Length: 253
Image (cartoon, one colour):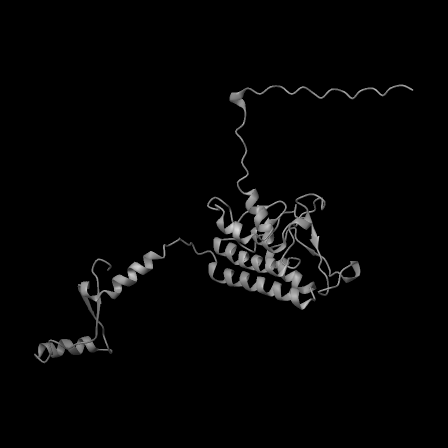
């Protein structure tokens, strides 16, 4: 018997001069996306997200709202460490895990995440859930919900249409309530962070009437100022009378 020929040697890679070598790549956003998809509320809150794009999308997790509610939504090797079973979602998660996801969803909405952003085409997975709390198997699964080119709020509504378990419907309802509550006031209005001490300072200044150096006369009824002017001309004005006064500070005005 002839011995098999040895495999060809690997190609020789050219050496790259040190000056031309690329700098070390650091994955700044990857761990945050993983934490979002796993519902790790505490980790996300403590992480440095100052440079994180809350309006961005991920090829495997979709938008931030997709990641929190549905975890991994791209088809990958389920046996791998980053497979489907490593992330769960709002419905498959445990009771405590679902509560963390709902709290995390509210937090990311406050940071600027938009549930109307659609997931990219790479999010090509679909999802079904048990029809009942203890129903498992192909015959007991709901219809499929797809994620690609669909917003997180639309996916939540689609899940609400197919899920029949009251326990799971309650989770979806609470997620939708948080999404609607966040979207109702945010809109396109620009926001700025204000320290809690600022309104406290202004409130204390307003309450300190001893340093108020401006008195604003309040007109109590229509024609009151004209009436006071006529009485002043006739010498009938009471020096201490007049309408109510509001005291203010010239520095604030």
